Image (tube, rainbow, N blue to C red; front, top):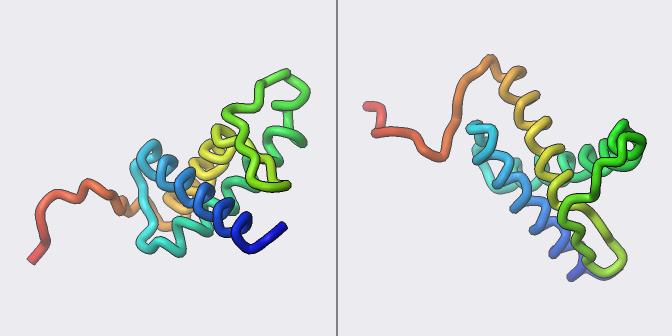
Length: 106
């Protein structure tokens, strides 16, 4: 696995986390945090897909992507990122940080 494959996989994980932010309505503040949420959410989605009940219940792999030797499911990565974002929302005390903030506070 080369450096280019790792960069592409991390970029795709960041995009999955950005989609999860739109679904959940809660966003983290920096691109580095979004990327970390995407990577952890992708791993959580992998665990849910293959180790959890999804494998036994027959849930399908959603939108498989192959980057070199890495194969992961975009759908399960977004689901895992949603779970991570919901946990961060609960831990932060329910303060909403949204892409769609209205106006500016003075």
